[in-house]
Image 1: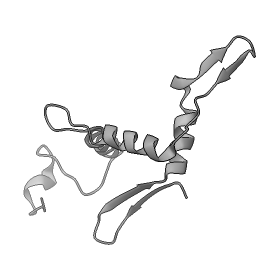
Image 2: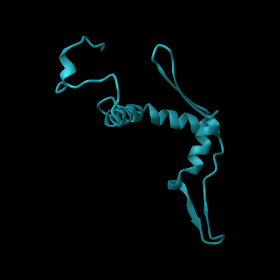
Image 3: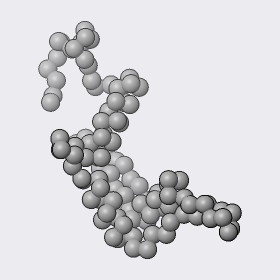
Image 4: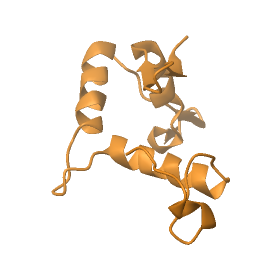
Length: 106
């Protein structure tokens, strides 16, 4: 399997992405299609070195902004927001009655 997202028994989220899946995802990204007038088709790029390409994508994933955040931080922030908007369990807010009743783990 090219993309695996799992949670361990201890609650650790593990994301594994193969070079093959990364290549496939890059080739399907419509941003990089180029129209070829001669053939009348949209052409996609070719990955000529999957290892080098994967390293460059990794570097982009861990590239820090001035505040220390990376694209991975933003991905998790978006996922957290989505989970909360969909009614996530296990989280309470100061305006909720349950907020003051238990000690919560940090």
